[in-house]
Image (cartoon, rainbow, N blue to C red):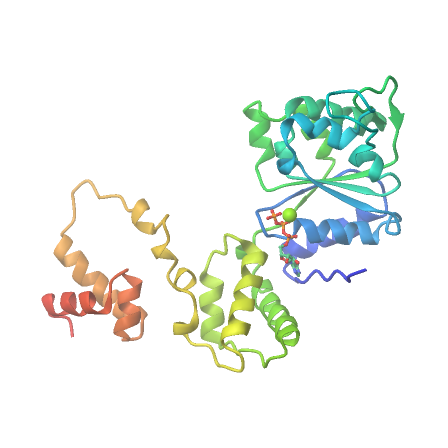
Length: 317
Ligand SMILES: Nc1ncnc2c1ncn2[C@@H]1O[C@H](COP(=O)(O)OP(=O)(O)OP(=O)(O)O)[C@@H](O)[C@H]1O
Ligand SMILES: [Mg+2]
């Protein structure tokens, strides 16, 4: 089996890992929360591998990917003839995971009637498929995960409160990468070295300045986005000292994203002097770009020519 390595040494990450280790040994239900790409899948595999069930199966179900009319039969199974198209018995994922672990990913997307059925399973270990007259007891450890705010969903009536509290016995919250301090450079080194080895190329080199740029970015796609970025750098800039020009613009100047800072700019009550503000922004952009006009232009979302024209207009040298 593939060895699972969870990289990180920031206090918020280590605290999750510590809790995960403590609870791996028991059968307690776990609930992993975290933004997309923070490592919910890898953490689940890690916990299963550390648990006494490690030699049994780990079955993963993405609740968001199940068509609504098939959720019940997919999870709990069905008897032949219990509905049109059920031409043979189907055990369902709970029974398939018997003795092992069932990972219910994107649990927030489970339809309300299925939430009730899951609760029954969690409270009594009972699994009753479509067309079955009596429930059977199945031995499965449940790990659920979501990247949504389930508590908010409960308040809006979109998720059952009783199930939420039943799942939330041991909550594990994977912090977003931007709140994990030094983990970024650690993961950067890890991915760069693994991927360079995989591609058989010399790794690109990251200066302190470039690492600082990466640390200032907010990484909405978290560790997955960082891994993909590292792969791109390994492929394009093998054996190369990276400079700002090599960094994708959305990382370099996040203010140019769709949800840019301009959306949040609110005109003060007393108004502003646009000409003076433009001149001031040009000077600040030049200073932040260390005098490099192309980079300063990019910081303002302008082409170099337009930027030079505006510099001349405001008499900025
Ligand atoms: N701590 C870590 N150490 C090493 N690799 C990691 C770590 N965390 C995440 N990864 C890697 O980042 C990628 C995304 O992780 P994963 O699929 O577990 O995220 P997720 O939280 O399940 O995302 P989603 O919400 O989109 O399902 C994977 O390639 C995984 O191997
Ligand atoms: Mg996932």
